[in-house]
Length: 235
Image (cartoon, rainbow, N blue to C red; front, top):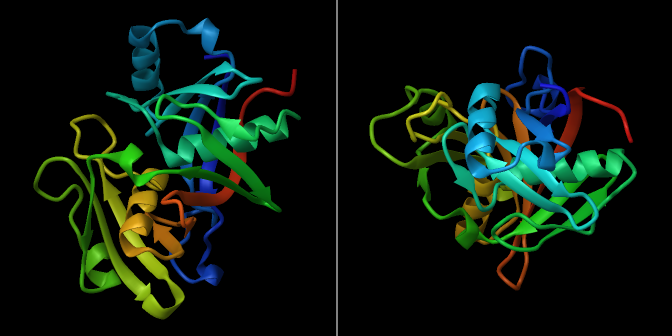
């Protein structure tokens, strides 16, 4: 479809950075972004397009100036999601429209930038239903057959280096659509950070890297690198 940007969010992990690394050395989760949300009106049409595109999430930008966005997986609409918001914030800055805040259905999400990293700030309560489960080692996480038995979103994790806040994780949505395993899941990283109460450096999936940092008000920042896979140019 014309007008769909395809980004790679939470990439950058390579073998040299300590864990994993995709075939291209970058990792990261693909994201579809529909820059003109008005071109796809209505929840039913948006859900159908998200299913057709097949990314773990697709974002529809409804108001560029105010940062109003709508987020869909191939099967459900989400009030909040980390990698779509990080990717959208990066894209808007790349287009010369860097936002201070994004507005998904969950509420206002502050945005910040630090060099090549893009950060968004949300609440664990916005990611209800994402259950975390600690495993004894990274090797045990790696050995999980995907998806494991059971229902509901599972974020399996283990310490790679507890003193350094370095985590190995895999995410299994288990919601019955085509996404068997999610390569990088910012909302689940927010939940885990809230539960542990400390900043984390998460190595997820084949080769993705998610950084987090909690704040005293209960919010959690989640950030990482973003690149454009394909798409248009600035208006």
